[in-house]
Length: 280
Image (tube, rainbow, N blue to C red; front, side, top):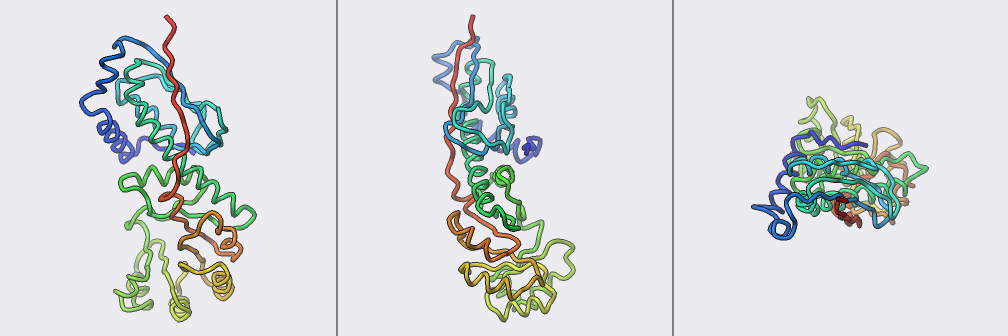
């Protein structure tokens, strides 16, 4: 799974990250490292992980005057402790300037991909698809959703603009399930509705709802509801579903399980950068 580094949102966030860290200049490197000094560096996995975001390295280093970047792995790859992820070579100052920003992106995005892969592995053998959510770091959604996909999950909607998801507050504001579904009948795209009670469920099915969201059920209750729906609509389960509970929810036989933890609670993985001087 390759990151689309031409996406304008990605280019923008990389430029802002570099500006945030380097500012008017890396004063430590400028004072201690000769300007003409050449060096190389390697990114190494310090733990087993699923890689994401490595393609950003080319964009990061090109923004600081260029460096030769060689990728040993691609996003979506399983990497074991000690394996090389990528190598860079060029001006030592440029490599040092970009080190932290490069590591921040790699560690954060690979953390998401690694957790995503664990969720996918936890439901292996079922027909359940794991979905991500909009619970992303503000400004980093494009990258974090790419990282989730690198880990094997399916991207849910990217924002409020590309699908209809009628949740409980929309139902309240619209005046009920039927009113809400009638209001979106002309929308030419995905429509999903959350139902909280059997009455709402029956009303949604009677109105022809094709995609239902069941939130905050126990695995046992979810199984009962899915059995009652009996294929009349696709079913998504959500609501605090964790890695240790997702197998039980998958056993309820929904079509989808959405997990906000994949993006909002993924721990950064351990990746290091090792600098070496070019031999003269």
